[in-house]
Length: 60
Image (cartoon, rainbow, N blue to C red; front, side, top):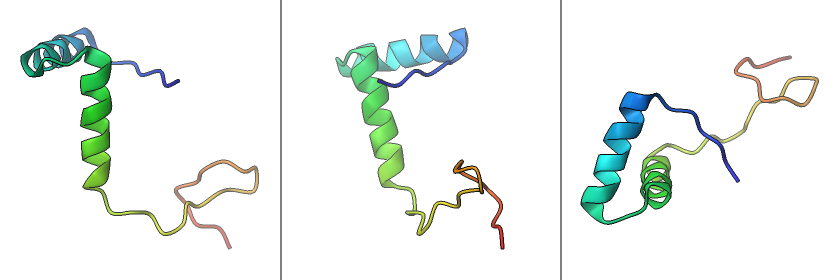
């Protein structure tokens, strides 16, 4: 299960968009994330630091 935090303004917009498409808020958010992810270039390798956490910096 995922947990996201969004502002009240964004929640209001998302709720209206979900209602306009006839989807539940959860289904609309899942579809929005899936469609956005489908248009992203894949990352060849996720860099991980020495502690095993994702790292934006490449280490030697």
